[in-house]
Length: 46
Image (cartoon, rainbow, N blue to C red; front, side, top):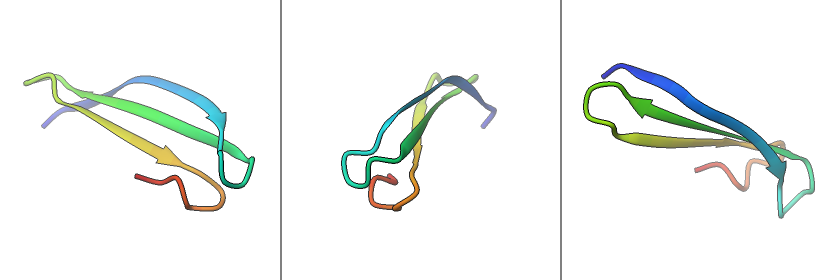
């Protein structure tokens, strides 16, 4: 799989109020999308 970052944006974590970074990856081959979330408190990570 050849993923590339399609978009990156930031929002506010609803749990701790810190910046929540969200990255959306898209596979070049089959168009599969994966979402990665990163937060200071660790609650919102999927």
